Amino acid sequence: MHILEPRAQPSQLMRWTAPLIAILATLTAGSFLFWLLDKSPLESFHVFFVEPLTTSYGWSELLIKASPLILIAQGLAIGFKARIYNIGAEGQLIIGALFGGGIAIHFDGVDATWLIPAMVVAGALGGALWGALPALLKTRFNAEETLTTLMLTYVAGFIMAYMVNGPWRDPEGMNFPQSIMFGDGALFGILFDGSRVNTSIFITLAVVLAFWLFNARSFLAYQIEVGGQAPAASRYAGFSAKQTVWFSLVMSGLTAGLAGVGEVAGPVGQLNLNISPGYGFAAIIVAYLGRLHALGIVLAGFLMALIYLGGEAAQVSLQLPAAITGIFQGMLLFFLLGADAFIDNKLRRPAFGS
Image 1: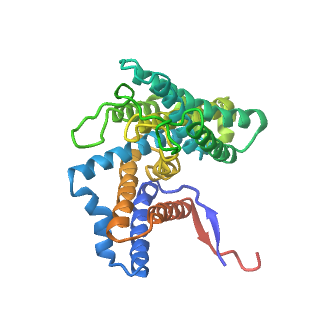
Image 2 (image 1 turned 90 degrees about the vertical axis):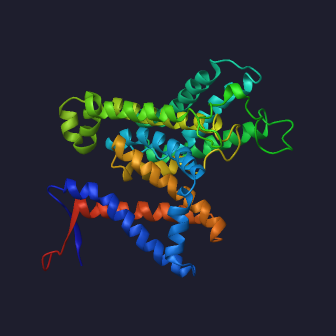
């Protein structure tokens, strides 16, 4: 029998190599999975990872799907560094979409330059407020944020369902749970003809730059990282644990809210029950795969977006179920966590008789 023993000094090189190990392990396990499904692994991988990128439209869709993943993961990474685990970004995305979409619905028919900025601000505020709720519960009642953020995701989903089935339901929508389609003034402008790429990607670019500068130059970022890696040293230095909790959860909620606005004022164009295919949960994997680094998250975001596209292509070309996307995401996270476990710990055989 062996036990895991913490390493005195985990290898930083291996920590950055771990995502590559996890990707290779996922591909290996994926080959076995395709074989069990009676599919050629080589043909399946071509459909999954190559076919979506053979057209300009495929590349544009990759950008569309990567943008919200990168945006949300940037905010999550702040809390993860401090060991504040927000796993409810999906709910914060939904509330951000509701706040921003509510502006579009209220001002339907108005074509003004201030409408999109107002929606963006409202969406950011909604997501931040939804992130502030678990921050309050954490600092006031010591409630575990992993539970509160997750449970609030379901509350957000029920609020969305109520609004699109009730007050905001499109009267001409054939009784479907959806709002009216937003007017042109409430939609981000299309950047490339024949694609869905829109100006919301500039928000993502701005957030990536802002968080890179924050992590590289900000003393607050240093406090957050010390608080996560060495809580005792953080307390000794007088760093505020409550400030870290509030900042982490509010900022991660804010970026998720921005992603929600980007979806409803972008490719979705309305409020409905399917504005996100699980971006808030997938962004957790993106943050860890990118090693909680602003630029690493960008690369991980594109990989996760490719998995989404590949899953859609596999459903059409290989007649595989939609769950194939979630399976690959789950394997990637499992192998990444496994690699990290052996980077931080080593196997040791206990001494005889101990």
